[in-house]
Image (cartoon, rainbow, N blue to C red; front, side, top):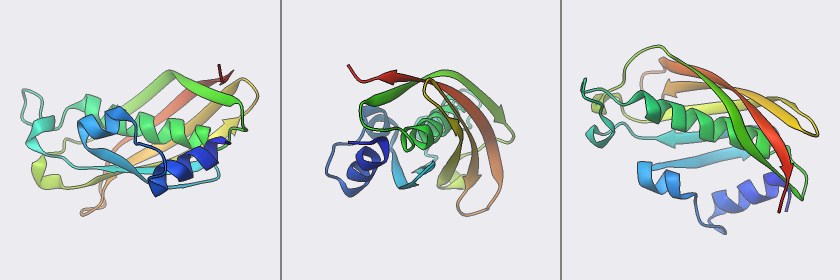
Length: 142
């Protein structure tokens, strides 16, 4: 399958979700040609010692959306791996924040390199919590 076909199969439930999404309770909610959207909650189980949602959770949501935006452009027989992730954290989230939505768009997907950019926003409050970019290596499937 192409990257987009695989992601659409995940979205329909024809393929099992990635383990990290189950572990951290977030999910792919929409995908198209060159873009992907993930959503996740902000419960206390995600807190750091400062009693706010851990920045690593923000980064994981963003990395998932970014990589899937790149994946959605890949032909059959190609896969990806993140080689660089840049995250700008703008404000803290707490359990009261509610659902966060990571929306990513591919910027360039070539034969060996893919790049994308994303925003992490509160579904209820519309605030921007973080934004990020990625570079992915494009590889043959083994």
